[in-house]
Amino acid sequence: MNDTDITIIGAGPYGLSVAAHLRTIKGLEVRVFGDPMSFWRSNMPAGMFLRSNWTATQIACPTGELTLEEFQADRHVSVGIPVSIDHFIQYGLWYQNRAAPDLDRRKISRVERAAGGFKITVQDGETFQSRRVVIACGIGSFARLPSEFSTLPAALASHTVEHSDFAKFSGKRVLLVGSGQSALESAALLHEAGAQVEVVGRATQIHWLQGRLSRTLHHGLGKLTRALLYAPTDVGPAGLSQLLARPNLVRRLPRGLQDKMRRRAVRPAGARWLVDRLRDVPITLGCSVVSAVPAGEQVRARLSNGREITADHILLGTGFHIDISKYDFLGKELLTDIRRANGFPLLKSGLETSVPGLHIVGAPAVYSFGPLLQFVSGAGFASRSLTQTLLRAGTKIQ
Image (tube, rainbow, N blue to C red):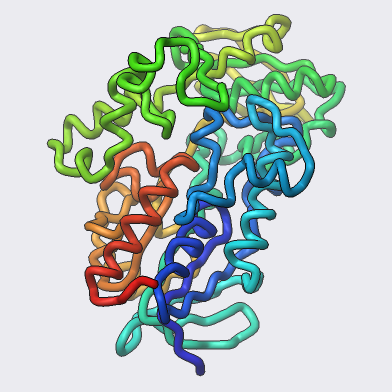
């Protein structure tokens, strides 16, 4: 059983960024486990584009290197705007080869408390001790499936994150539920793949986001105005964007105000570049599916407006519900010791849970630090905060 200082579970943008930052601390042994960029490779549809602007699509690096610009120069590719999922995956794998070349691709099957830290069990049975653990497992475990669809078989209903290719729906009739970016872009991709798709959403209108996708921070508005209204992290509307870019300030605000800002910042919305691609896709708003039952090899859905739709498949762009109890590697006793609110862990400085030495980054940190933490651009704050926590604990940096 070999001891290590820190174990990072997850190798997406957050796990890789945390690894790059922590490895600037002299003498700190860091082990990283995970399949690099696996969620983006397996749970995002081919042909997708990232909604965030150029600066917010960078994976944070402590030295200012490992940028999209460096990736382009090194790989002799030209990354367009908006950034395609294919280019972002390539960029993430390129980042991993430089920041965590010793990545261990094995799955962690169990994390339990132990004297001086944690006992880690790997899928092949290996065990070791780790003084700290950073969970950076993303949102793959948290897909939200509304109760009205829970009894349908997978052949008739699925979440958008269950698909990396919509070609199999060519010639099929698909009812897509949702009105946010994931739902709207999935609808466009389904239509372009030859499916007969219709969108149904609870929202009474679609909020189309203004394009802010330039490679520079100053685009569309005057330089000074742009810098004052929008943070480079690109989360939230004008003005609020600057506040949300400061999670340590957000976490000190009254709970009610935090919740209100989060709802405003991440309300269902679509990128304006989807408008033309959806012109031939019927969209019914202010409406919901009240029931859905099998009808032979198809599914019959009844809408709140009284209409019935028979489709070959219902695709759910219904977002995510964070609940860390769905992390199957967390030991029961350890999970019990983590203070939570509605499934979210309650985190303190360094994104540390109520269990000393256990940190959780990414979307589960939203309740404590605001909506920035559910976007790629939040990895910089998470990584710096965690690094500073370790330095305050007495570890020296190079």
